[in-house]
Amino acid sequence: MNKSEAVKANFSQASGSKRLRLLSSALILTAFGATEAVAQDASAPAAPPAPASAAMTTPAMAGPLSANPNPFSVDLGGEILGKVYIGGDVSGMAYYQSNPTKAAPGDVSSYMDLTNAQVTLQKTDGWFQYYIQAGEYSFPTIGVPYTKSSLATPSSFGVVPVAYIKLQGDGDMADWSIEGGKLPTLTGDEYNFTFEDMNIERGLLWNIEPAISRGVQVNYANGPLSLSLSWNDGYYSNVLNTLSGLASYVFSPSDTLAFSASGDVAGPHFSALDSGSLYDLIWTHTSGNWVISPYLQYSTTPSVGKTTHGTTELGGAVLVSYSIDDNWKLAGRFEYEDSTGHNIPTAPNIIGYGAGSTAKSLTITPTYQLKLWYARLDLSYIGISSATAGDGFGAKLTATDQTRVMLETGVAF
Image (cartoon, rainbow, N blue to C red; front, side, top):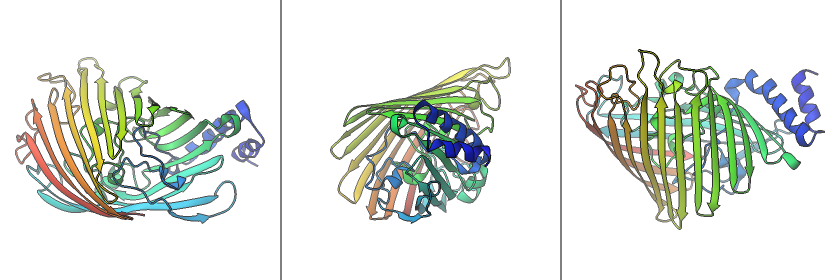
């Protein structure tokens, strides 16, 4: 019997603080030996009520799309493999946009592509749980040249973008869990993949947040309070240099307040974003058919001698969803983002349009869903000001706005 097997064997007979120590030992022995097969999204301060089956609470979905409440399952037997739920999403999109940059490969006036071809496998009960998400995907983001899925997948997080091993306590440790591997970020109010969010495109604030990181995360949940703390590699740097956390509290059935923070603790390196700190304050309110979620974001990047000037970014967003009936939903998002460092040559380009630039965006998304099939339309606009020459839109990179119309249709199975 090896060390990992010994820890698992002792676990079933342990309790209390001893079980927590065994959870930690098992995680260290297993999670980092298979970093391509581990992780879970704990960044769900604005998640909707859980579906009928606990299987599809991951991946988290903010709506208006709904997950399949009863996904296909296979019982593989045993305490480790157990009952496995199989789900996923297959979707494609077409868009038209004004002022394509041309400088970016594939950034054209109109295009069609696959946005998701992903399968999920997960075990959701017992002390040993896991989640694996595999396939192809893209990250359409407002104000950012589109990268087709065949390039986005290998150049970002690979064909297994999210996966985790989770060790869940029970008895007097039932409020605690430990997980490790490729972890969705704890920051922000938008998730990574198109089917998870209110809008097809990710927003301005999402664009400067970490998306997926490799590391270890400890979770605690008791009543209205949920806490998570993670040691990870930040912007997927492959160096464990970042500490991040999330605290959320349910004040009433209608109101949840969440605060998240993420920052480098190893000193400036890699990039300005990876060396800085980021903070989000998120309030989610539900009332009848309405979901309203405003949030504030603040980030800093440090000065590095004479090579990099320190800057700050401040942004705000309001995400809104309205359920018209069982099939039709309407979502909207407004954002504003500002950065410092204008006319300072060594200031980093944090928000993408030059140091000291500002950006605002508006997105409207009507959605129709019939059982597992859905179709939705993004109508989006972004305007920028104080942009650095060469960081704008259009063939000459001087245009100050862009409009997109994007249609996505797919099946969440």
